[in-house]
Image 1: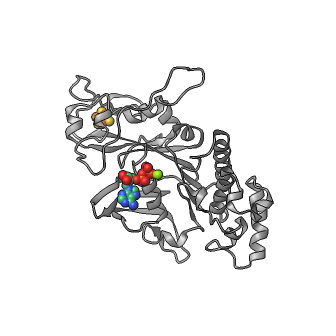
Image 2: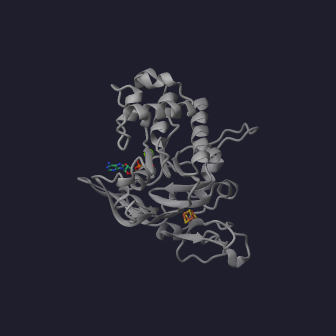
Image 3: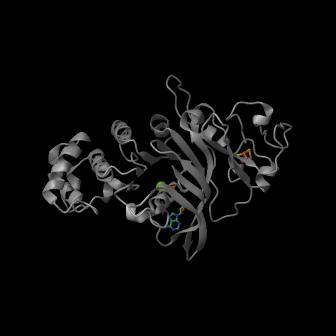
Amino acid sequence: MIRLNNVVVTYRTSRGSINAVDGVSLEIPDGCIVGIAGESGCGKSTLMKLIYGDVTSPMTLSSGSIDYGFENEKGARITSANIREQWFKRISYVPQSSMNSLNPVARVGTQFIDFPGADPDKKRVMEKVRGYIGKLGLPVETLDAYPHQLSGGMRQRVMIALATFFQPELILADEPTTALDVVVQKEILLLLMDLQEQMKNTILIVSHDMGVHYQTTHRMLIMYAAKAAEYGDSEKIFRDPLHPYTRMLISSLPTIGDDRARQGIPGTPPSLWGDLTGCRFAARCPLATDKCRAEEPAFVEHRPASSPPVTMPVPKSSSRGTDNGSNPPHRGPEQGLPAGQFHP
Ligand SMILES: Nc1ncnc2c1ncn2[C@@H]1O[C@H](COP(=O)(O)OP(=O)(O)O)[C@@H](O)[C@H]1O
Ligand code: SF4
Ligand SMILES: [Mg+2]
């Protein structure tokens, strides 16, 4: 189990500072695929970099902490302070646009040998690599090719092969299918799902495409303007989304047999540089009230004994159960409703 405790990630620039991840707390169980969804600029990649431990200027972890749920060889807990020592071995990262981050002047095979942490016996490594890439659907000749000789889908497979070669417990994949055509997208997602099934590890997948989350993930985090909007079991979220933003994201998905034109969500998220008073979704929310515009909603975790945690925001001092038009309706277990039946 990985625990993020109220993490705040700040970019400090000459223009000023913004919090690109603002007070996110999460528990990520072992052995599942977790999706991170949300529009461009909401902090998905920043959160991935933070979890990977790739925190360099102008990015800083300004408060909060991460506990990765495992220890190093000396018995010390792995946290945000020492996660880097686990790179490639127990945590790996397929960054956004990673297809283009292969070394263009080195043959693919060499990139496995030059891999930090690789076995110094090159012959032995190449033997293992040959066997491994075959399992990932890559012909052995791929190892002699230069990256530009491969299709986008094959380059992404190579990136995934590099990231999974040491069978890390945690794999972070940032937009792994963006820029690929639909057929190749599906192949890459199936490959990630197969690998997770075999390795029983945890994979975090960032995508702005809700279809990817629907097909791939066990749990989902919906981010909005640097905040967590909703977190929980993917099936539950798709069946019964709690946050109006999640509902809008889901209803913008096309469904088979429904020819009606689907619309994106009107409006844009607030600038992280601007005034962020109140609920950050208020300007686009059909349920918004003056209270929502004035008060930042708290992130409340609803965890009944029999079900996995579901988290959602409700305004701090709103009266639950009212639907008199002055506040958004808030319903909870005290009204006898089943778990997950809140809506903010
Ligand atoms: N190096 C940087 N310096 C300053 N701001 C940054 C930097 N990288 C990202 N940001 C800002 O942080 C916010 C979140 O970015 P990012 O994590 O890339 O979002 P996403 O992956 O969801 O599109 C955006 O407002 C972006 O402009
Ligand atoms: S707090 Fe208000 S504005 Fe924000 S999502 Fe809930 S109902 Fe909408
Ligand atoms: Mg991104």
